[in-house]
Length: 415
Ligand SMILES: Cc1cc2nc3c(=O)[nH]c(=O)nc-3n(C[C@H](O)[C@H](O)[C@H](O)COP(=O)(O)OP(=O)(O)OC[C@H]3O[C@@H](n4cnc5c(N)ncnc54)[C@H](O)[C@@H]3O)c2cc1C
Image 1 (tube, helix red, strand yellow):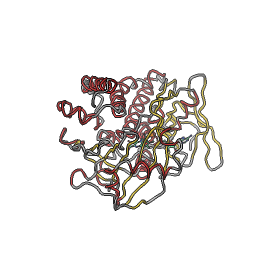
Image 2: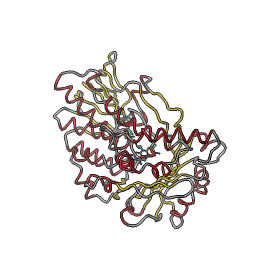
Image 3: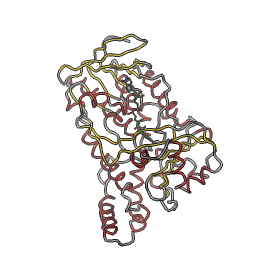
Image 4: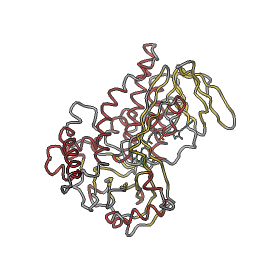
């Protein structure tokens, strides 16, 4: 480890590994540090097809194609009454290679990205924790790291915060704004031999509502016959007076016959995990010499499996802004954050889609029955194709349908 770098990247999830790889590839000295031993366990296994372009740019597309990660070609929804939607097949809307993606074990996937950053020239260290980020006024000037019981000071022209939900710099500078409506808890585990669909829908992510829409399950098929199964609900609903997580999971499963059927001949292969999923945003994304990427930038409810794609994409955009900043000798907040406005414009559509799912009065199935013209637009959103004019056209009609369904409930009319 050197004493000075052009860029220090904190955290080796998909966001940090992407930034480090691209900055090192551009010829700038780059340090990537991860506090845990790589590979490390992480939730977030279902990818979006738009990850394809970042994989291509990073040079890992062939590794993804030849891996044993399960191929994901669709997303499917099961309503609170047990009605199964037709799968949203990505290639039906857009028949290209990039319309297929993967369900990944994050330990292996993130290690592939970590090794790739090293291959492209970054100094990569696991079991190395950033204890402090140094500031001179608003300007980030380096970090203090701890490795093997030893503390070192590293100077840096730029610092990327890719610490995930730890959100090191946002917490330090008080930049976090919680979304009080989306304070959720997830309880999940892994099952052997859960019943999967046949054929093209075999690798689908399936999202299943429980009977009173108080929670929802994910079904994510992984390699070696293992399936990731989790349940998500409001923090208070999931925790208050409900007993331990395995009991809450079992109770919610009783309210979801479509998931019970899929688990009828399955065996649980590890203990339950629990995570807080507190959606939040940040009031600033960059400062002089520093920028946020991935979950440190903001956390969006995982219902549509957007997190890893956003981590890869923000990692890429921040890397490009930094490389351009080095070339122009401009490491200002506006240069390092020059991509954030356009990024937020696209992400806005996903936030609206999350809001629609959690509007209990609203039914996607009923909406699409009378608005078939929007199936393509909705599939685009599920693919992650949100950064183009017209990406949010569906909301012209969907917003009205949501308002109408709420009015119907208030006036006591059937929903
Ligand atoms: C319950 C749940 C389900 C989810 N499901 C999905 C899904 O199906 N699909 C999807 O795309 N996304 C999903 N997500 C979101 C996804 O997990 C994240 O969006 C994604 O991992 C973000 O990547 P990242 O690189 O920003 O952060 P992370 O992957 O969290 O990586 C951050 C890294 O920084 C390290 N770090 C932290 N602090 C320090 C420090 N001080 N020094 C050194 N290293 C440090 C951490 O150890 C960690 O390895 C889910 C999230 C939750 C909570």
